[in-house]
Amino acid sequence: MVSTNGCDAPAPGSPPTTLKILVAGGFGAGKTTFVSAVSEIEPLSTEELLSDVGQTADRLEGVEAKTTTTVALDFGRITLDQRHVLYLFGTPGQHRFWFLWEELCAGALGAVVLADTRRLADCFPAVDFFERRGIGFVIAVNEFDGGHRYGPEEVREAVGLGPEVPVVRCDARLTSSGTGTLAALVRHLLCMSTASSPWPSSSSVSSSSSESGEPP
Image: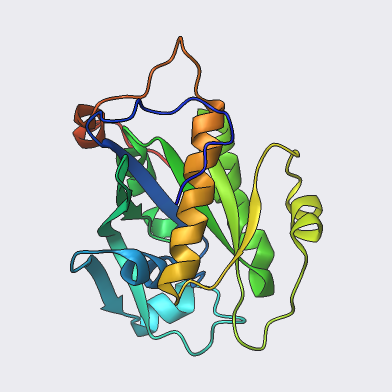
């Protein structure tokens, strides 16, 4: 499924490379749905009902029908092909839970940033977070029913991305669409890798950090 297009890749016959991947984006962008759709195991989700306090604290314009929210993380796993097994960690979207992002990004090789064109500015903090830490990512434009359809280059310009960052269309509800997005990310990460920076072993996936902070 993954075409390396001439970029570095694990040698044929070697054990699968396990990669820790984050699924990030704004509140209500579809992170939990994305992880649930692509995971080959029963996904772990920390969804809770929105309280009256939460509805007051979170901006609900454009996602008025949303009744639950992730309060810690989502977790899933997908064998992308015989050489790549991905561990997926969905980040919480609300500002008050951003202190968890530093813990979640420890050992991460890359990220999918889900963008909701109804609230495009909500993905800006995630883009800034990964750019500042040198973590490769792709923008996945989650095309909600009834939402305006923007072309990838329109989204690229609006977010202020360079030409090297892939922008793909995505329907977070569909397994095939989510898998295609992850394949695009893996291709991007392979192209970013160099001989002097070999891909980490699976031990890096389980590494953790005692630091905590908030995305700028």
